[in-house]
Image (cartoon, rainbow, N blue to C red):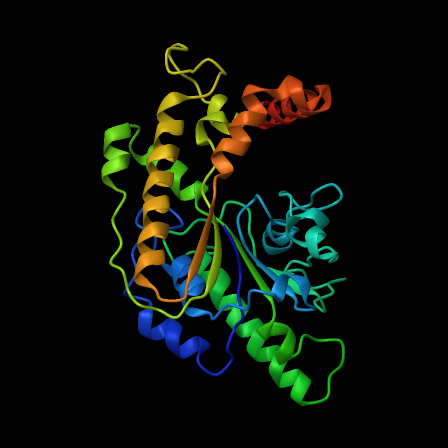
Length: 306
């Protein structure tokens, strides 16, 4: 999930504390709501993408640039990250550099922002490293400490203007969806765990919300033992997992519509990431053989590690 927001320094922490118990949807099933909380409580500047603000990323392995390695002391081969928060995500479109992981103590450059994403992160439970709630707390400390050092005259740090015009990117939720299946493989049981959301009038402006991709097409899920292939669709993806992803996305789309009607002067853009990713899998030959071999290589590497 990605959104362009402007953080108001004076009211940010207070509003988070006051509304942390009000929301109950988005991110994934039984989410503690911090994802929606930040999206809807941080005022938005529609022009921040083209400005000079910093980029702050929150998420899981899809955008981890080294937090897993630094946080757990795991020695990984270069480039040292697990996910894909390279220059094109989330920085290439605004000509930004690589995002340094917040947990990396050596060689980090936070002048252009920071990455709080951690491989395996989820939305629940909120108090377990490195859930979305923990990542948000890390950001609040990062901002507070930056302001203290800037006030003392330290150079090369993010100032208040950069925080206010910053781009805040959220890409998390699929691990919680997968976790719901691991605890109970019943599709109907998982669907019943998707809660509805009470609509609150919170001062948002412009939001870009990405839905979740086809969980049943992930090599990790396809590598799990199964009795037969009756649960696979025509493209080799697991039907129950993808059905759950679709159901989740339907709830998310409805939520966006409700918020658009409920919140005055707010604009919500819902991006169908599921359709894009599934099309790459179903019609991979149209995109060249390189994509197909990259998929095969990643699948083989995953199976070799199991």
